[in-house]
Amino acid sequence: MLIVEVGFEGHGESRRMGERIKMAAQTDIGCYRKNNEDRFAYDLSLGIFAVSDGMGGCAGGEVASQLAVEQLIVAYRLLRNSTISPLGISDALYHAIISANTAVYERARRESSLAGMGATLVAIAVEGSAAVIANIGDSRAYLLRESASTQITLDHSFVAEQVRAGTLRAEDAANSLLQSTITRAIGIEAVVEADLFAAQLEVGDRVLLTSDGLTRYVRDEEIAAIAKPPVTPEAACAALIELARSRGGADNVTCLLLLWEG
Image 1 (tube, one colour):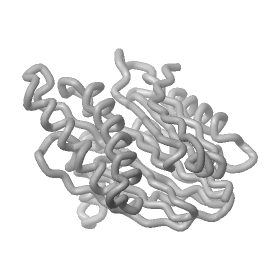
Image 2 (tube, one colour):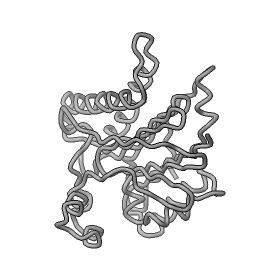
Image 3 (cartoon, rainbow, N blue to C red):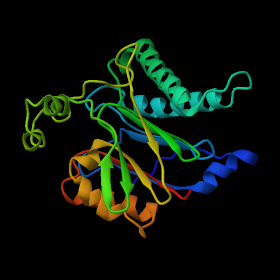
């Protein structure tokens, strides 16, 4: 199993957020791929976490996802820690995503070998019990509360949008050859629109950020059952990835799981 971490430890007062959140993250190359285009990153002290899936079949998928999560964290830190006018978590996350998109887009323009690269992105920013979740593409965020699993984000994919429009049945979407066709991605255009969602966390809540390498194979109710207490975040991530692999694991799979302890 390949574990990729881009983490930052806080100091002094900022450590308090890390004391209120337990987290684990794991990524796996899957059963057939020759490289891993998934990446995750976080700053536990600031309460910012992200997962990105490089666009398969495009040049530089690994570069796009790595750059997306790194730039997101760096920009978010600068915006939150500004001594002139620090931003709240929603505005900081919004502008950090713009920064990440610009970084990937400009890198692809400068290097012809990376032309066409892009990535999905799902992220959560936490302050106190308030959380803001953002996504671009089909990487997802789930709220796991008690024994239920609720998908927070909406997939930006062709089949998901057809299902929401009522022109495609959900059961047909699961078997569609266009299942991996996404309609929004980091770095493809100079400007990209992220969806943002607000949530109020309760003690014991878990939030899962994951790439589609998991959700192709594992149903929402199975996620809830596998990741529920007293299973630790580390054990839950490992079990979810192993289940996806056992069912085919044709894609890279990444899980980042937060436990809010209040």
